Length: 141
Image 1 (cartoon, helix red, strand yellow):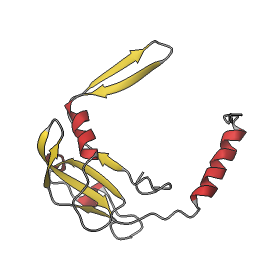
Image 2 (cartoon, rainbow, N blue to C red; image 1 turned 90 degrees about the vertical axis):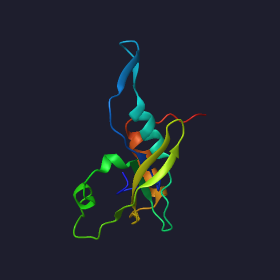
Image 3 (cartoon, rainbow, N blue to C red; image 1 turned 120 degrees about the vertical axis):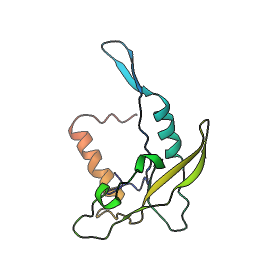
Image 4 (tube, one colour; image 1 turned 60 degrees about the vertical axis):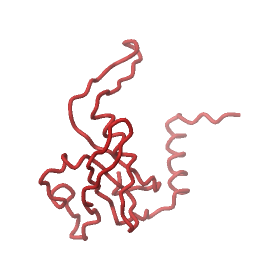
């Protein structure tokens, strides 16, 4: 998602692992699924952490430092077409997370920016044409 951020959403992602509970609510015809547990709360809090760096970045992935272990950034995010690595692994930092306490987290930030070959207005027009062709466009009068 961060490699081709057409709309410049600049996503902030939180990652955590562990046991969770999956729950379905509704009827057999229409239902929703959700995930509950401490890892879900931790990932959510990590997504809200803003990495402490003076240099600009477009995307951040934040996770508990224990999740990284001995991984190598070039193995996790390999370079493409011999371009320099656009992702940078920051040093661990302690963050106070709401209802969790202080957690040592690590961040991976994307320093490069993806510049789309078409402007957003052209993209929207193209999507609108596709929606109309599929009969899924219902403008309000």
